[in-house]
Image 1: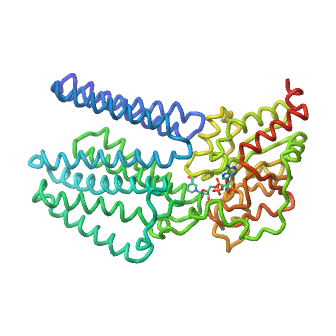
Image 2: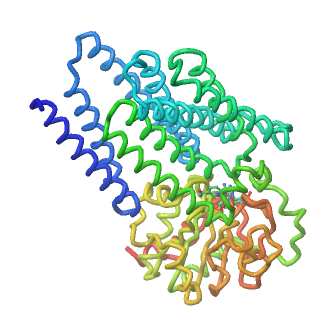
Length: 472
Ligand code: NAP
């Protein structure tokens, strides 16, 4: 073993350790940011380790430098410009890039090193091409659907789609069986083509509402494709990293399905049923009869005297970009001696961790963000709950009405609090497109308006009441 090989192995080992630590850190809000840094460092080291092992020509170095510069710049610009509400689309795009990379690596090995590959490599090439292609095209479709660029064609909602997908899967299988005998010929292209179309075929029927779950699943697939690519090129690091991503994505998919009260089978094969198409609509038609509404002034008066206040952020808070105003309001209340916390539902918003990221952006202290299981027993001793652009995640029907589509979904039990103010623009429905029993409870009052405008109003009212001055 040469010195450079030993060094490369040591770097690989360090990268794997850092990656594992990074993944572990991502499970806690407090450590997520630094964990992300660790994972990025692991990735950088992994690339360095790989390059050290190769005897590269000047021309190869130039290609690598140019590719790194172009890819790095594209990543940097994307990360800087993408708004928080468009994060699921961005993640979909990045997953797609991962799938495409594994696909290209496997195709390149099949085309140029076919004579040197054994059984393990051949099976790995097949898996890498199959899963990589599905991940790539599936992710592009998922991104297009979330952006509103791609709709759901009518035929994909009928049984025809199952026939089409089965035919594509069979074609991919034929390509896979033919590949060992003719690795760089027709079977390879049949496998690439059929798998790519299959990625489109399985993602196209799924409604935008379920898309974040699909994206999480595609994330897992990109890990599987990368692990298979690791076998293809003989990289232990890629195998380990791919397996970690694959497992983490699968666990996240399962957590999301549970929190949304959906089974993975119904997400993947149930078509575009479910709510996204109805977001924000249908409330008035839903026939609310006992709604109490109030002004920001009345809400501010309740806040002024409250000893314990819980904010429940939801998708509408992200849409209104009101996180900084919310922080300003909490600071005023805290200065007034109020105990403030934030109740975080696992699927509030449109992607896992959406609310945590949003509130972290406004420097909300991590210890004030309380997970559903922690905050639920606290609601009965809470004076005021302010629901900000959240809907489904606080719907009490999920606990009490067996006929509700949400029945069984774990929710934030805000109906147990003494007083609830719901801030939203109308009586429109949330993501699930259904009526919310919370709005008609006697302890609930609606404060209609854009979340940011209402929060600004509350801050002004409290200042007028002298809350800020008392604090100073
Ligand atoms: P939601 O049920 O979609 O409700 C959001 C509410 O925000 C709407 O009722 C809307 O009412 C209000 N809103 C929109 N813009 C607003 C603005 N500018 N100011 C104030 N309010 C505004 O949201 P959620 O309670 O956060 O629940 C999330 C839903 O998404 C769940 O059903 C969950 O299953 C689903 N989901 C989440 C994920 C995830 O990973 N987090 C993934 C997939 C699906 P108005 O139009 O009346 O204002």
